[in-house]
Image (cartoon, rainbow, N blue to C red):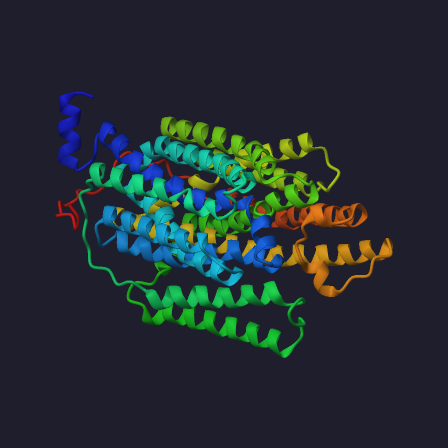
Length: 522
């Protein structure tokens, strides 16, 4: 890079490519930790639930708890990033993640584990939102595709290595599932140190009002409805007083949230003015639907491989390479091409088409589908997701004013996480109900009596007689395929939303001249 170019960058407040790469090391480590928090536990969940005597609902809520608190905190982190030192915020999120990990590793029961995962989600929400915000603060939109490719690669590495690491740890005598919560702690510590040394952002400071009440009401209302979906039909009847009360409470809280966002909050957690723009509306709708289809269906693949196919956690981790390999290639390639051309819509449309096709193909799997075929279907889904997820954020960032990038990025992530929470909870309830029905009828067919509770439990397959084991494997196998079928229409709706997004060529500048502010930490 020439001296004149360097001088121009300094005058504009922009960082050089070398400075960005140095800071990216810490950011990518932080992003790796955030992704690892979910992936490293995925293949341990069946063993965790068995050891802690949990149910299918417990399995679901170990995942949903993290998604909900991540969702609740994401827009708040985004607002804080518009006001305070971004490096301190990222480091704070890392500390919260470490504390949550320690509590989860020592959890004596499902209740404590779910609570620890909820606390851990606060840190994950910060890391997920802030890495995007920091990159948007350092890099003009036109160049952001290149760095989005690095994020995609990090996501892919964490998604590939996480299940493998988690599976190996669970299978190694003397370690077990508790060690999966320790493994991210040294990486988080390293990210903290690297960021302290390399991330020195000029801060554009503006006074903002944090809408804690709005965020709390939104997530409280959605959580109430998710609890209803998860437990109705099992713990209480769909038409019972408890069921009707939860629905009424959830809707009332959500109505209060709408009122607060429209009339009370000075700066609402979901800024209404954002939705005056068609691109923001359609990208948000697509993010909700992608989150619902993606999280809601894929989170149960590890359970499918271990319960329906009898795999060890390590073997189940190896199977995840198929989907993540496709995601890795498409995220890097799409990022490079977008940087070169400034055009991004073709990747959103093509990616969503592949997501629809991948989900539809996976709807045909059961406990007898050849593993090579399952892997090929997962590759298709992975390629589609790699071309879609980051580029939805990019489309909204390109529309946002420089001072609102933190909020805009967080809102998109908020809705994607909310869609994921809804998907995991609703499809988890569907899986539980379908498995219970199939197990009950299957056991009855072979003359084995069963109570209603037994059909809702996740069994230790090795302890079951062969005929009973076959019933459970078939129940989980066919029910998992049905999950993908249910998720497919939501992906189709996301494709329709993406088709109507108006493409605006990416800006080549940050469009702001930051004012140097002293850092809160040295």
